[in-house]
Each structure stands twice: as structure tokens, then as C-alpha cells.
Length: 188
Image: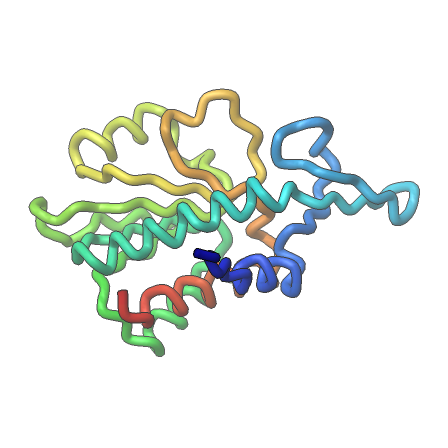
């Protein structure tokens, strides 16, 4: 019996340039595939599509879990413009999930009940959360699932899911927002 493979996510990654990154510090790591020198000072690196596809599928499964179990989604975002863009998106598209968006400057406490499972999504660098605060979020606030989207190369990720990409690129945050919209509006 022949299994039909759905390639729409891979096509979306390629069409949206989600696998390109302009950061030059990607020398010989698992995320980097090839580097192209555009000029002497500018390089363009392509990310490994298999690793990127794997991490995006983990992100999709995490969002499906949030929707299916009525979990609480905490989003910490570093960039102010992206914070307002994501907040505006969530205001205009009333999704059937419990979500709280925090900026690095405004760290509001979540008002969800302690019974709900909490998922933490960090968009951008996580320099505003140190290891002590991370353990506090796990133990006290009961955030059991984490996902980061940034370009920090980490030796020990402490079991946190990660999408290696430059989230400061406007096209990439739009891709993430559209992916969130597509997954949360779709019936599971």
C-alpha cells in the first residue's frame, strides 16, 4: 500500500524563505547547511531543511496539544513591534485558546488557573530568562512544555524544543503567526 506524503509544509518553508538566514555566525553547526557570500561583508546561509522541518512539526504538535487539551499558552516575545503585531493578530482573530503574551519589559503574571497545563513559547533570545527563572517557571508556574525560536547556539537545551531561525526578520514572524493561525483554526 503506497503512502501519500503531504509536502505542503516543506513547500511553504521553501516559498517563504523561512530556511534562509542572514546571520554570519553559523559556521559548522547542525542547523547550517550552506553559506553563500553575496558581498564581502554579507553572507546568506541556508538552514538544514530536515532539522527545520522536524522542529516545525514539533511546534505544530505543541499547538495541537494546546488546542486539544485546552492548555494555557504563554508567549514571551523580545521585539516590541512583533509583540504588538502578535497581540493585534490575537485580538482580531478570536482563537479558542487561553493565551497570554508578555514582552521583555512587561512581564505580566498569567491569570490562568493552576489546574491547566501551561506551554511557554519564547520568541527571540531568552536572555531575559535565566536558568533560575526557567526552573521557577517549570516548578512553581507549572509550565511543562517549552519552545524557543531564536538563533542562539546552545550545547545543553535542557529538554526545550527549539526552532533555529532569526525571528527578527519580519517575514519569519509573519510565517510563524500564519502557522499558528492555520493550526489553531483547523479542526483536529
